[in-house]
Image 1 (cartoon, one colour):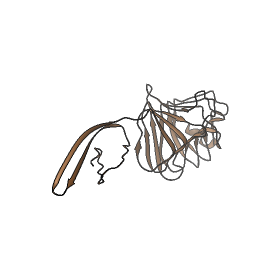
Image 2: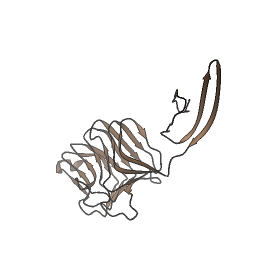
Image 3: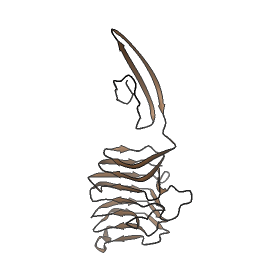
Amino acid sequence: WYMGDGTVVSLVSHNYSYPRSGDYTISVVAYKNDKRDSTTKLVKVTKPAVILHTQEAIFKDVVWDEGIHEIEGFVSVVEGTLTIPPGTTILMRPGASFQVGTQSPSGLIAVGTAEKPITFTSSLASPTPGSWNHVIVGQYKTQATFKHCIFEYGGSGPYSAMMVAQYAASFSAENCTFRKATNNAILLRDLSFFDLFQNNIISDIQGYAIKMNPFKVPTI
């Protein structure tokens, strides 16, 4: 079996899941004694309306499809870099979190545009502040870049903030909106700081807009 994405499988029959949507040309070649037969077919793989991630750990470079992704439990970027394309919506179920660099070197690139922002929001039909936990950046991050992102309805969990950096970690946020969070919008724990913090809007927050070590305030 030649699956059209570089994968070759030597089995009579098998199930195969494509990691990305697209058009694939599948070829199967069968042998019996000295005879050979083959057939080829073009298949179109479409992404589901909502892509569900349940307690998912990422260990390599991954680029998500644009669309709607729903998080149950957590998504943790353990190794490699996760890239989220413009126009993507991430629906966070109650108690859900998004983690990068908390265990080993890893990165997250979430770069939207003014026309197609990336949105981290609640999965609930009628969300309220605190409907999900947080996005957390750990001390092992290799890159954590957010541009034209919207964060809303988070802030529950042990850190009482919607965006968290810990153990002297850092991230950049540019042209982002942080709104409708319970507790704090952004928490920079310990000696965490901003790589860049520019042209952002923070509104409708029940706690502090930004809570951080006073020695790191100049990084704003």
